[in-house]
Amino acid sequence: MANKKICILSIDGGGIRGILPGTVLTILEEKLQKKSGDKKTKIADWFDLLAGTSTGGILTCAYITPDKSGKPKFTAKEAVNLYLDRGDEIFDVTFKQKLLSLGGISDEKYNAKELEEALEDNFGETKLSELLKPCLITSYDIRNRNAFFFRQHRAKTDENHNFLVRDVARATSAAPTYFETARIKNLNNTPYPLIDGGVFANNPTMCSYSEARGMDFKNKVKNPTAKDMLIISIGTGGIEKPYYYKEAKDWGMIAWIKPIIDIMMAGNAETVDYHLRQIFDTLSTKDKQDYYRLEPTLGKASSEMDDASKGNLDALYQAGLDFATRMDVDKKLDEIVDKLIANN
Image (tube, rainbow, N blue to C red; front, side):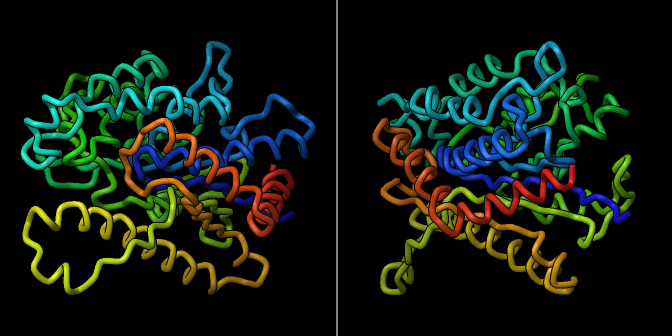
């Protein structure tokens, strides 16, 4: 009997645009419930490893946070509601803060208090080691100048790698110019100054692939290669906004701030997708079809990562629904569901 596939879910960063992958995963969860005949099954039940950056890191934490009985605490819909219900509060800027920060140029654009309160309300005292599945959540250590990964499977065996989940979520979403750098402590009280993992891995799928290569998945396979994996990677909305030479040629530091963040995030996501397609294209016809990249379209929603106006929240949610129910995407989601069920 062939080894069962290692099922990996990876979610990009993108601020409030996390509503898009969150909505797609709501549809996927509903399909899994209907097809499996289990109305209580949730996203966490179907994946062996979950990865996320920034907003994708927050969603990842939500999917695998346990309730008091040791089952997934949140449905996919409840995870999206964190954005729909609290997004306008998290990305609310007072006139004084706007004036003092010069729109994020001289200081962070938003006070992190509302974000921290939302994370505490949802994750409480839950520890990284208590999450239900192995995970990889990205951040960057500005003091030691290295990529920093939060890993449930590492935290289970080493308190130096164990943190409160709310602090994990705060660190991975500490986007420069938007929120203050996070200063969090592990359970041994060692402090770390961390920022958003999107600065190096806005699309964490390649990181999750590399992580899985060195893991022992009990009852499945040890040190899996691409042919042993089923990877579902979800973006936060493809941005096609062009920048024209006549405008860009004379930009200085201030003018380049927003475009360069946009270009770096999009460029990383596209590059990771390219490399994974190259890897999977070397496999057999059957196995090469086990890498899925779902990049929702924005529809009428704004591409701004912090536009949490009521109108844009609704537009993002609708764009996610429109994408997930599009004929070609609906077919892909059905394929994914069939593979997940057959695999488990």
